[in-house]
Length: 506
Image 1 (spheres, rainbow, N blue to C red):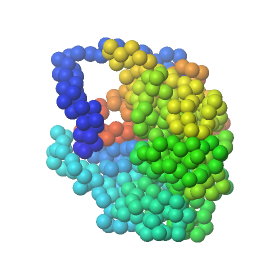
Image 2: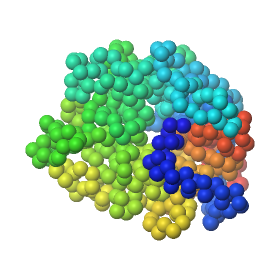
Image 3: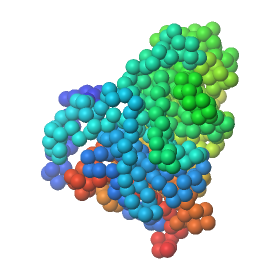
Image 4: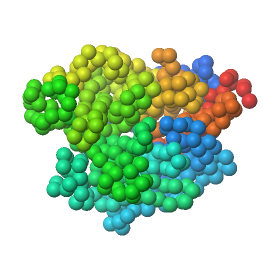
């Protein structure tokens, strides 16, 4: 409820409610969209979509995971795990071989951990005054590791941080930038032992990704553009010592505005650039990725018009990490960044609410640091591809009405369209939107209507089995599964996308 009201107010409450009211009235009077979606063309006719019900009618899904992003052959034919965010502590699990779905309860450390049940809610026309969401763990994003264990960004305790996170601590990261609160943390579930490990982090978490390094470092975004840091967990150290304080770290975002290639004394975000100093910025990450090229950390920043960040870690990240900040070029009608990923060449791919898939190639930049490197210094690095679908009426600018939530890159050809294919969630297309050789391939879900994904991943179950041995996994990620075709009682869905060589292939 609070989120809905906040977003309406951001647009202007009177104007926004008037527009939505008018839209509703026109639909009720029988008005149809001005354009029709195209029927599947070419390879789009070869798509096979398999759906399973999982979770329960009062819950919703945010993300799923089927394999290790770094090695998509891991967990072949194995369990698919979901994350139910604010709706429930019951984590959905699918066994796709035996067509069996079940749930496991995600625990918390502290019984006083906040619950969604006490969040401000309004009565529902479907469920009345019943507060149907009751999650304490608030799991958001799952990820398999190389050992077949599933890691979550999850709430494990109340927000107030322990002393080692705060000012006066001798923790190396707290000395640089102490933290008072963290609203979501980390957990790990081992399917073999059927046990959770709960990890309290000083920094808030949202999305997570493993690095391709000797420590299998777990990098975590905060989700909020107002965050001051990015955090990590040295998994090797944690598994050897069990010391969650010693194994975690974080660093603020500092631009190299004096251009000397190292981190120095900085000016604060609201202070003017000083050519003799660096500059700290507030730029919490939403999406997060690790470059396979050089191990740098990339992420998306939800400020307007939005940006991508590159973090060069240095030898001692709490004190040496330097940030590069690249704004989306609003002069080309690009804006509204959300989720992102990176390909094996180090090119970042992002979803934009301006109706574009955006790519950013740092290799094209003429300026990387110095007093002008504060966001608008590399428009040449950006390329914008308008998404399928109509543009808003009377709007002539580039883009479409599509408002994609996330982009994931199929680095290892887990689907069949090739390696390094970026695939965006087509949230207003009822589809996933894959970019192949500069053109979109629409992977549409015809039934039930209302497919709205927030994440996907790809797995190779059998490299020798052709199209039947691999595919993409995704979920219906909308918060109101009772709004999709089927109505009240409809459960969330998990989907498997596969690509046949031709429409009649067996």
